[in-house]
Image (cartoon, rainbow, N blue to C red; front, side, top):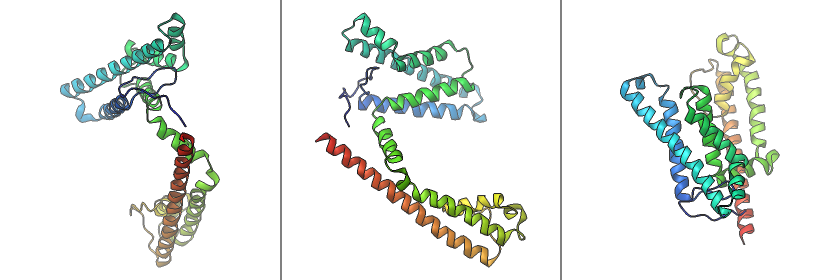
Length: 251
């Protein structure tokens, strides 16, 4: 699996070259700032003059960065074709170039409010694209390999966990339905306790009252630990296989 080599500060382009590692770090930092800005914009304590100045300044910085990112990628693509008219057209009318242009246009025109669903959705979409077209793409390819290489084997423990979770909800319903109708009065209601027990989360907000119910919860909790451990082991095995295939391809 090969990637085009780039300078550490390279912006990337629309012809297939990924950004350099240093630029990718800055890009990921801006995305973190974006997600923080979106989250803080919903916090009532930031609904002040100083809060709005901070949030607006952060948003303006993010907009400038994304505009520069688009112009930089377009310029690099054009340069790769020797600054020819055809080269500019190839970059400008490329699929991802047009997507970036549309995103920048919507953000710059400010037709929609900054806190609207449309603008926030566009920022998140732009962030996903930016992450994909960065060195983080290697991680995404690794995840894709783990998910698709042998899903029946890798995620068998997850399927087993789902089946056992249903069985636990069924049995705990039979045992506890007369003692706690609110939480165990149906299989559907018992699912919450079953899920948090099987996944070993164990919030403790709902507990069985009978001895048999407690023994059942302990037993299924142990089964849940085993299923999670098997899932983790299978994912690690798929990750190791990915590394072996990647190393053999580089030889």
